[in-house]
Image (cartoon, rainbow, N blue to C red):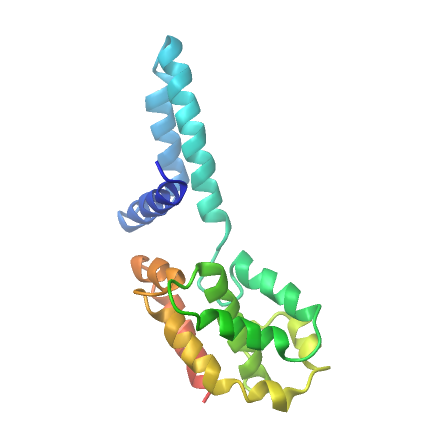
Length: 194
């Protein structure tokens, strides 16, 4: 089985459990372990345990990268913030938008970077998010804001692509989610870029 398929399957299981009203999907996974491993004997027990540990590890990895619908509520965006704050000028912002506009499938890390870069552009235009990380705000204070603000049109185009579930992994993941806060947050960001 392909690893990316396992990841998608685990995300789907988590989403289904949340949609079904389980407040703690992890507890449900614990029950599955109890019923499929603990109540089994002998060599079969070891096989099931190995399989379940693999599934749980994959499940944990799937959930570890994002913890909310906000622009900076994921590891990919925070990795980009670190990259940005270590740079000078607008090249890292231009690069985030260039990567988002490449033909083909837009992977989640590049999508998250484009959304974070769009937040920087909005802040440069004088319309910052109240959730803009302090280190990014401090970095922006020492950058050519007028030059960065000129990326507003490109940022809007990149956000349109990031939202599209047909080309964007991030757009697809959030479309599959019952939570519509991400789409609302991106729409609010688009408004601040005008």
